[in-house]
Length: 196
Image (tube, rainbow, N blue to C red; front, side, top):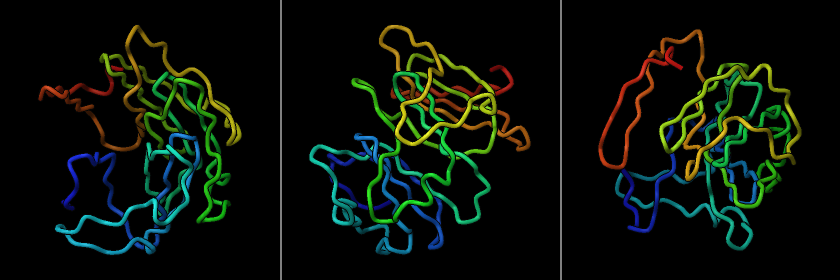
């Protein structure tokens, strides 16, 4: 893996190719598009290039999610999950038609909230998992897509001191059978997805 400073925190890894596009989402609710072929190639010993040198970020704007848009995708929507339990589904074309090197508003983030993660999907079920071990599964086709500069609707009711960790698409056609969870203390657990 690339060499990094002790203050760096890895937020994601994914397989990609030079025809794909990395979509970068920030704490201000903006999205930046970065064609993968514009990223300098490195080795497992190089640190990499600072994304801030490729875009002009606002003061204190931080990257919260990076996802890979495959050039062969059949996804129709970009779906956002926030730490305070909101979900937002927007048509993918509202993001792909934007200029590549310009940050554009992707989601309206409410005061005290932030992104948990972002994913692409068609109309699969999603599974929302929280820090305190709660989970809910529901069908996204019942959620109407809304515009880019909106905040979304409630996906899960959270208890005290809880927050959403991740929202995962569950494709009925694939062979995924289990959810594997892991804690900071090193505990792992395998749960059948059908239990949700």
